[in-house]
Image 1: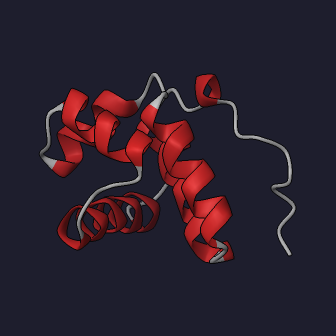
Image 2 (image 1 turned 180 degrees about the vertical axis):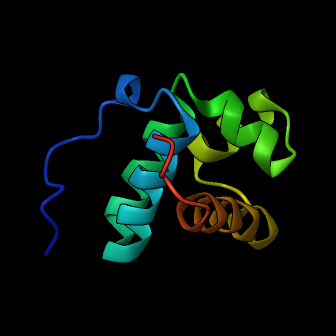
Image 3 (image 1 turned 60 degrees about the vertical axis):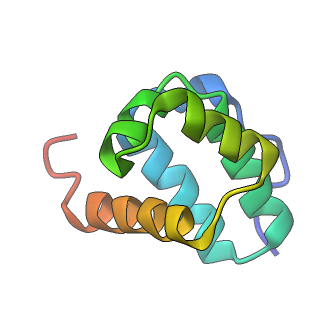
Length: 94
């Protein structure tokens, strides 16, 4: 069970760091409901533009896909790559 029983505040996801942390935690948990909630929060996040730029998708398109929960495996893998690269790229400057 995850400790993330409280809703994720999209306002707290104001950077690629914050989004990567949120998504990494959700993916690690593996619970579909938690992953869905994290993706929905990211769709409303102030830092969505940074994720969209890193993934190479227009912000509006990414936000709509995440909010609806309807996106393909390619986009999922691109998001996971960004999260993984960002997390392994080090938070040493943060």
